[in-house]
Length: 138
Image (cartoon, rainbow, N blue to C red; front, top):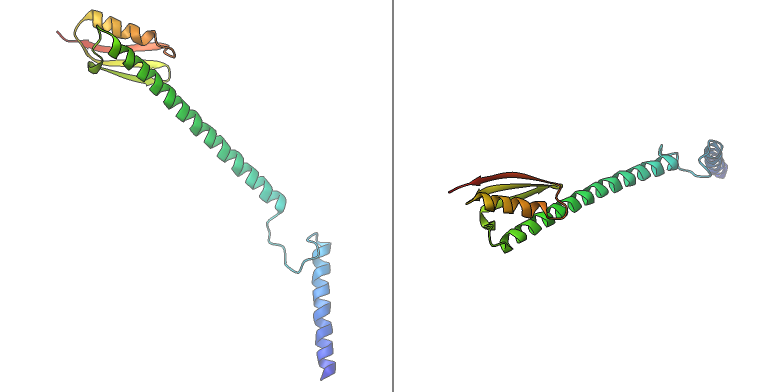
């Protein structure tokens, strides 16, 4: 009986040593676990790519937010100039900014009011072009 137990114990030890030697010679080190199929270098590369992609998307989002804030600032400056002007009725004029292009829409009572509204928009920092869609209503 002890002979059988000793033989089984010896076979178990040989099996473990054989598995360790097999893993060592195949480059997996002294481990009892078989390889997972995931290489550390590949995983690092995948994580690096994911981080770069995420950073690029975050940069794009930040750029879009910056553009929206800039456009909103230009629109607000123009509306403030119109509100402070004695000739222009800011409540009847809509100002939309896309990039550095400003579009004025709405109704004005005279050519002088129209010209003044366009000039106020053109004189605002950050504006390269003003699209005049104002209608003169008498």
